[in-house]
Length: 217
Image (cartoon, rainbow, N blue to C red; front, side, top):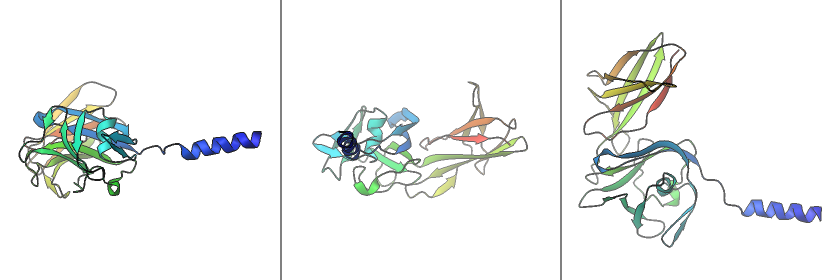
């Protein structure tokens, strides 16, 4: 009996769906509304008649609990609407993994995600020439932190953002401070060694991106 029970447990474990990857997710809509960023598990899902495997970029929308509509074949679904933002003319929804747009459907198995990746869905006003997306990085030592703000095109090519607004919050507090990046897209900020900071940025005409966490040394 014990051997039978063990075999049944092993069979159940083998047939259980594999856990989806854990990714950082963000959605930025038309007009600038956003959901996230936050860590989500991208599980298998059903879209209409399509049963989709875990880890697909389209599953990020479900994981963030964003209502959406999609059309097309199961391996080539096109997201036509998220919340109230519906495709119109050249405007529509696109996604990036890291800083690049893969250029494939978000339901294509070739685009399955890996844990730790950053996935962003955003409204693109002109297909083929989407607004760039922000990327914020920082390094801190000796009581100073240098923050660099870049804007990335669909191919992941970076360009510094002069005059970007840099937003800094020391973790564990609610107080935020804003700074202005210089002509080289960087800002030098005084910080307290041993503290951790959440650093983000904004710039007109550029889609917001993921914040970063920097530990001051």
